[in-house]
Structures are given as C-alpha cells and as structure tokens.
Image (cartoon, rainbow, N blue to C red):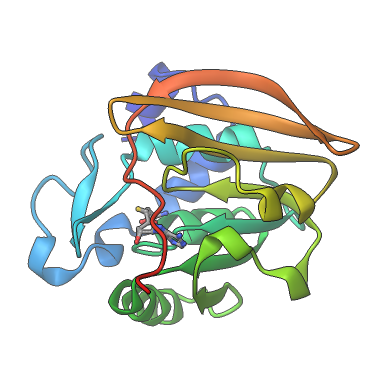
Length: 201
Ligand code: SAH
C-alpha cells in the first residue's frame, strides 16, 4: 500500500510510516472485512457510509500538513481511521460524527487500538466544536455544498481546511487557508465523498 501511495505523489515519510503502523482493517466493522482491506479503494462501514480510500486519507493528511501538536478538528469520524492516522502523526484530534452507531464503533476501536487521547463527539459537524476552538486545521470527510460558516470561525488565522465540496456528481476536494476572515484556495482536485447531512428533525 505504501509503495502505491508513494507512486501517487505522497512524499511525506511520516505520513507513510503512520499509515503503515495503523491497522486499517481493525477500523472496518467485522461484517465488512475482507481481503481488500488494504487495497486503494473505499470500503463500506455500514449505515451507507464508507472508510475513505488510503490515497485520499494520505492526500488530505498531507494537505493539512499534519505534524506533532497540530490541533485538528475532523468532521465525519466514520470508522475512526482518519482520526487514528492523524493521532499517530502526533496531532491532537477532535472528531465529530452524526450517526450514533458509527460514533460508538469508532470510539470502541480507537480505545482498543490505543488512541484514547482522540476526542470524539456525537453531533452535527456544521456546529463544529466551539469549546475547543480555535483549531490549527479542519478536515471534513463528508461533502457539504458550501463551507460551513461556523467551521470558518473555528479555524485559526493561517490555519488550513481540507474538504470536499459539492454534489456527488460534481465534487472538488479543496485546500483552503484562512487569511483574516477569508479563505484562500491552495489546491483543488476532483473527488467523490458521501454528502454532509443535516440531523433529522
Ligand atoms: N473519516 C472517516 C470516513 C468518513 S465517511 C474514516 O476515516 O472512516 C463520512 C462520515 O461523515 C460518515 O460517517 C457520515 O455519517 C459522517 N457525516 C455526514 N454528515 C455529517 C455531519 N453533518 N456531521 C458529522 N458527521 C457527518
């Protein structure tokens, strides 16, 4: 997997080593595990959701410039795998998930795999995590149709946000840097993520 990621342009050795150390298959619920757990494709984790493909995890982590001590907010805990990769790199991670069963699964796996320091919360990511703000970086792993304003507020000046934006058939993965109250685009590739949903009334 790591050689494949290197060929695709993931040059940060710390990220490649962290991804080698985190056991991706343990984050995939037993019912969905199979021989393809380390292939470069998304895998189902139940509730219509997927764990992102390794390349996208590596790419987003590289664009965030994750490093020891970086304070990161993740929206869309899902399986917990992306949060674990960030924590393995030494980042301080806060992560929010809207589906209760996934939030519970991720918490259990993070604890079992030694990532007790990752903070998780059940809730709607549109609101961010105001008590812990500001964050040095924000990673959104589901796709909103626009940048949620509360997340812009909770990002520190000069901080980076990496997120997919748009509808399933027309999505861009953006890297944005905050300058004053503005977000300045740094990078943009085409991708496909699950939508960022609103809580049911
Ligand atoms: N980062 C995950 C992949 C997550 S898939 C991993 O490493 O496995 C996207 C996740 O975003 C799903 O679990 C979905 O339930 C969640 N999600 C969608 N809308 C959300 C919202 N408004 N707030 C928080 N999480 C949300």
